[in-house]
Length: 326
Image (cartoon, rainbow, N blue to C red):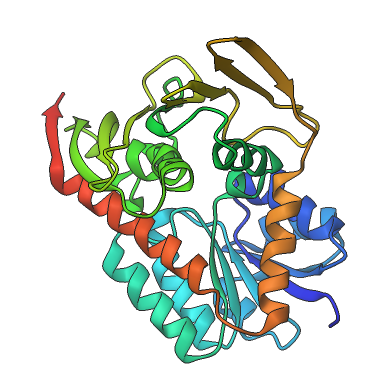
């Protein structure tokens, strides 16, 4: 199969900084066009990556030389432009979260299947080799039976005009930041997690949540996840997985640069080991995985289930949350 021809709908920071370089460097993909609402912005990005500049997202979807569309737009626009791309016959890789509501996520996954197209959600960290190492250690019994996960992802306050503070764009800490530890919990504890409680700090003036926490648990095993997230905190991006015979811990857990060598801490009764893992470009790995799914030409049942499960957990956190208005 020839390289998958990619059209990019928007010039968000994640697109310019991580995904466009990954698409351009991959032997599996070729960047055909970059679209923006303004011609100048599209042209500036397109000149960098040697592709066509397109004014407007509809014009991008009309191009016959685009096989798949990458959607890095604000969350509130994901469902609209993902649906339009699917109806235009394009595969879609959408930034996380795929949509703001589980019902919309389910509807789009059904539409993709009906049309024989791939729809994927872009959580980069799940493709990092560090998590292969973690899952292997857990499967080997390195920490015994898994009992609990403690995870956090927090960042300092952003500039006042940051889109994370815009309710009309589905901003807020849960959808932008909290989704990472939620996705991590499913990755490390399995698919049966349920939400048992949550707290959200809600900024009434802006209409968005600034941070919070959630308690998840597996009703069969009793394994639990305590998750903290927010954008009014000191920076944290790590987790600790507790077992009956030890624990694993990792920092810089969600968005390490390609040259970073993760340090996985393994604590057991007989001592502590800090295992330095190989570098891994998770953006490149995500691009390769998406292209391979398209190449196979069949739906990814496990991938679809993970996307829908994630959307359901986020919905349940909102429903269960005690909201503290500030």
